[in-house]
Image (cartoon, rainbow over all chains, first blue to last red; front, side, top):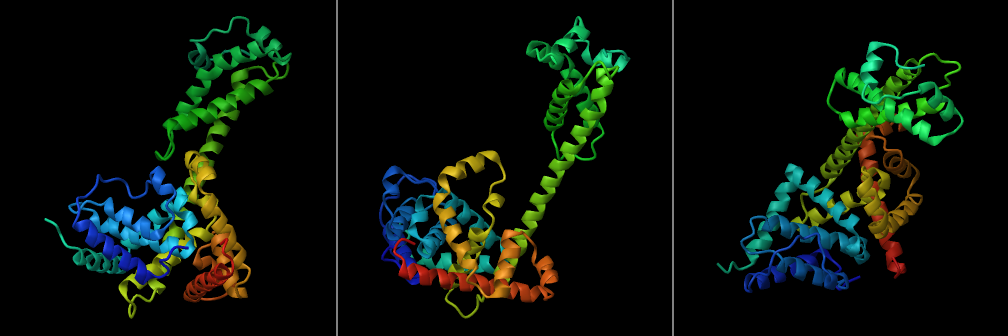
Length: 126
Length: 252
């Protein structure tokens, strides 16, 4: 397991990375579900959060959705084990879960609140 | 034997057989070239029958290619079974077999499609139940969302692996890449037996037998809401049991 062992720590790591990402140049975007060779050896949730957040452009219209995706992946890896990080079926599972949560009106409202909280905390460089 | 009526002639006119009795005799002796020639010659006949059944379809759920595949397979089987000593016409012999194979095959495909639809309904019911029973109020929003996500993930993990893999490509891919999740699934399933009796039954009925909460309620003579409650409790208990084991096992 990584050093991140609670939801609060995951959220804190997300906040930190979003704040840092907002003050640096955004790298070339890539899919959240694909992983490069260097990333395969990286089994830390905190590093995963950092890498995922850095892949999101500040002006990405789907930024909120992608941030929530990072939160979901981190929570589930923390709960079920980081060994799932290299399992493509894990990402399919996250797809289904995110879809189900976003389709539920009450849960979608909670997602919007959570994402707004995270993004509002990050400084917009524009 | 042979192509006697107008329909048969039209069906096979592009592929003349020459000495057809000799070909059947050779096929009966196990000569593969003769068999292949007969099959090739009668494939248009199978196609014609497939087109006829396809024209009479009641919906567009199944593509013509699938009708044709069933017809072609049935034709090959008919060629192998046909005995010119006992049956007068191959087309007469093959007609009902091919049509029957198409109709049976399409019915089976439709049944599979119905099962997929049923499966989607089952997943929707589960998700709605889990989402509805989550206590979103009174918790910090990130913890609320994490609880919901973990409950949904537990359902996914417990579910029958085959139900997540509907097409061959995906199945093949998952055989090589789904190992970690499969191992987790096996560990979680082993924990199901540690659950209290009713909770265990609900989990087994729902995830291993793919029964809806309504059917489970009927089977267990309980209300549907009680089943949903037991389901939620069972997932919570499984999560706690898994955590207990994880705390004692660094290899988890």
